[in-house]
Length: 192
Length: 202
Image: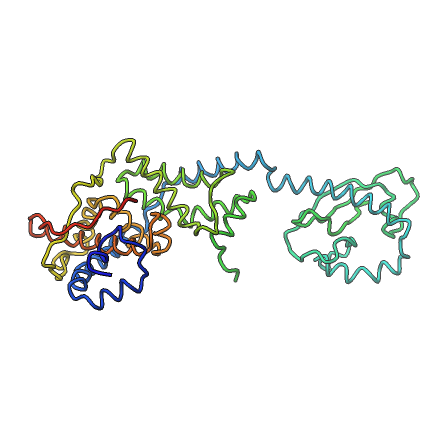
C-alpha cells in the first residue's frame, strides 16, 4: 500500500492491517493522520450535544397505527387470539373428557396423579380448585396464562373423575379454563 | 435479570405481530437514524419522513432484511441512505451537496496543531457542525455514521456498499477536510488545494 492507496477512497479492499502498517512506515501519512485527530475529540463533543435529538413523538404514533393496521389484517390482536384459542381449547377439552370417560381412572388414582401434573402444568398448589389437565403435563411453566369462562357438558365433569349430580348429561356447567400462551388449556375449574 | 433482546430477536418478534417488539426496536434505533437523516439532509421534516419510512419498510412482506448479509443496523441505515439519495435527486438538498467537481484536497504541509484549540466548547461544536454540514456528501455520511453515531466500520461499509478500507480512508480524509475547514475559518482564508484522490464510484 502506498500513500495514494491510503488516502484514495476508491482504493481496493485493503485489509485493516495494511492501513496500520502503512501509517507506521510512512511519516508523511502519519502526520496527516495526526492532523485529523483533534477533530475526533471535537466530533465527540458534537455527538454528545446531539444525543437528546430524536424524532418527534408523532412519528412513533404514526408507525404504531401503521403497525396495528398491518398486523390486524394478518392476525387478530393477542387478546382476541387468546379468546379464540380458549374457545377451541374448551371444545377440545369437552371432546377429550368424553373420550377419557371410557378409560377414566378411579377417583383415588386421579387424586394421586394430580400433584405431579399440577406442578408440570405450572398450576400453583393453592389453586386447589383447578384440576390440571393431562395434556398440560410438560407444558412450560409461566405466569402468562389467561382465565377463560366456558360452558361444558356435565358429562365432562364425570369423565374427569369428579362426582356430579345426575341432573342429566345434556345439561351444561360453567367452568373456568386456564389457557397458556401457547393456546393449550392447562387446568379447569367447575363453577357449579 | 433478563438480558436485553438483540435487534434480530426484536425483528423476529415484531414480524410475528408483537407490537411491543416493534416499539422497542423503534426506541432503540430511531434516534441515531433520525440524527443521521437530519445531519445528511439539514432538514427536520426530511429526517422525520425518512425515519418513518425506514420503520415502515420493516412492516412490508418483502422487507429485504437478510441477517446473513448484514446486521439490522446496517439494513436500517442503508434504507435511510437510499431514501436520502432519492431526496437529493428529487430536490437537491438545501445543504451543500457533493458536486463532484469541487472535491477538496489536502492542505500541505500539514499543520498538526489543534484547529479547535482556542475555541470554547460551544464554539467548537458550532464550528464543527458547520464544517460537517459543508462536507461533500460521501465524506459527510461517513463522519456522521462512524464518528457521530458510532456505527462500526463493518456496518458502515455495508451501509455505503464499499469495502471497510474505503470507509477508513474516507473517514480519515473527511477528518482532514474538517481540520482544514476549521483552520480556514479561524484564519479567515481558503484552504490550499493539493493532490486529489480518485473519485469513488459508489
